[in-house]
Length: 124
Image 1 (tube, rainbow, N blue to C red):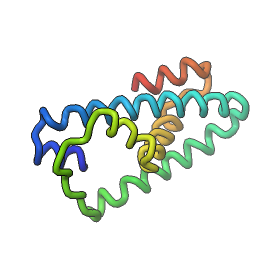
Image 2 (tube, one colour):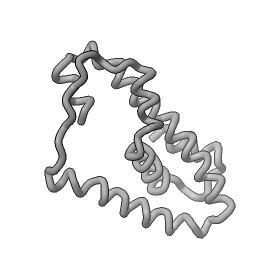
Image 3 (spheres, rainbow, N blue to C red):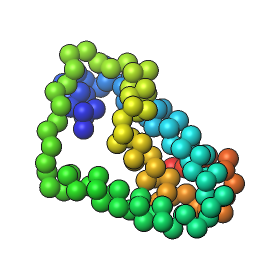
Image 4 (cartoon, one colour):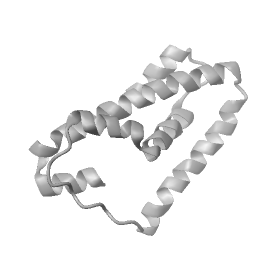
């Protein structure tokens, strides 16, 4: 939502670095998380069903405030965020980790090898 607000206030050209940085940071974070979770699920495959239930609960938790319409949008910064700052913020934001883990658990097939799992989720 802050990206939308920043884009509306500063324009697409000045916000493009932030947009690409968020996408790149999220892709790297998701691939790394899927590779790690893939190794855990290969070791303990019975955790996959439990983790999918937890991931579905996280989706509901993240979607709740959006459905209720609560929460304020932060004011746009006076200057645009760079590509590297936006990519680094993905690793510092707990919500981004939660979204990556949820995507990995809901979309990750158990039968794939760890390297293929990371590529599969990165492609999504």
